[in-house]
Length: 114
Image (tube, rainbow, N blue to C red):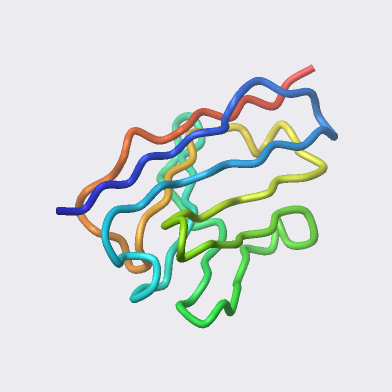
């Protein structure tokens, strides 16, 4: 059974950093491309970053150079280091396989505001 538990969100000022963590069940991380998605208020959920089983990463243009996705297979965890945060980064962040499972965790809320 798939389980994804996100954590690490919070309220931060623009320009600051946050590190999100995702704990995944079973062998999801080692066998799949994993992604961090976000859903901004009033908008559809979008893929922000992804990492392949071999560690190849991809990002949407708006976060390139600011966000870094990484993983530790032994800890069954995926991370998203977010630097130089902007108000437009506000949203609920989820981790999931790419392409995603139907199942979603509860997400972790990130609010970037002064």
